[in-house]
Structures are given as structure tokens and as C-alpha cells.
Picture 1 (cartoon, rainbow, N blue to C red):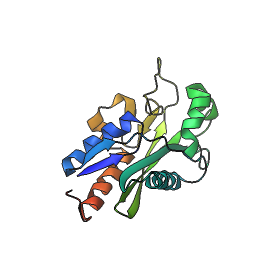
Picture 2 (tube, helix red, strand yellow):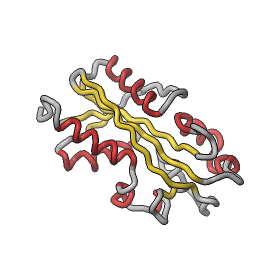
Picture 3 (cartoon, helix red, strand yellow):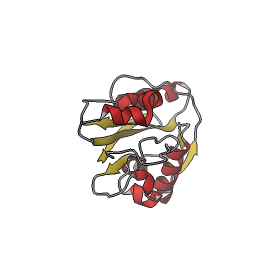
Length: 191
């Protein structure tokens, strides 16, 4: 079965391919320029993206959205994650959290539309941000907080982990496995 993934983030596509391939789902990139709202929840943003894809004429597709949340600031940065990082970078994030709890979590949602049905799978990964910036820190394309974020139960940041290790903690991986289970019960899944 082929499942188009409407994202321009190559890292997200790679993860989806790795997670869904064992379920017999072939993920193909669907490069669409979608408008990302800057208000509401992660799940709501994902549903807005899916609606845009549907209006473009697609009947089968997947979208996702994600953000990081700082326990020190209710609901922030959340849907503003990308915009906040682009404007203040690592230095600004560290200044923002100076003297505050480093507790944080990633929240994400994957939404799928399949022949008129739509469903959304939210997930999260709890953890904390490092107290100090690593020397020579470089953001991962599309995942700038990975070099700072240590998942609960881990001793290293996501950037220091192998892809296999990351999958133990990945909110997107959890959501994608739920997508696979849901799709396996849909009519026409073998097409």
C-alpha cells in the first residue's frame, strides 16, 4: 500500500519510511506548501493541514505537526516552535529558561485521510533540556531541539543517539505505529 506523506521535511519522511515499511506501507513524499496556523493545539494544526491536502484533491495522504513545550511556560512554544527558534536560536532559548525548570516535552500528531475517513493520532515524548549549550552545537535540519533534548529514561540527547535508539522515545514513531494499525483495518488497504 502507498501512503503519500505531505511534508517537505526529509527527516520526517525518513522516519516514516523506517517505521511503516515493516507494516507493508510504502511512504512516498508529497511536496506541498501547506500553511501552518500559529494558534491552537498541535492536533488542530495537523487537522488544518489535512484539510488543505483534501482540498487539493487528494483522497489518501498523511500529514503531521509537532512542537516542543517548556514546563516553565504554559503552552509555549508549542505551535510556535519553529518560529521561536528561527528568531531567538539556542542563545535565546537558554536565556528564556535561565533559572527555570528544564522539564520539557515534544508533542506531535500524525493525521491520515483514507477514502473519506480522517483520523488523528497525538503522542508525546517527555524529557528535559540541557542546562548548558554543548560546544559547537549544530541544529539538525528540521529538528533543532534534538541537540538539547534528553528524553525521560535516557542519558543522552536525541542528537547523540542512533536512529534505532531514537525510535524508543519518538512520539512520531508511536503515532506512526498507530497509523499502521488503523490502516490495516481499512478497506482497500492492499491496493
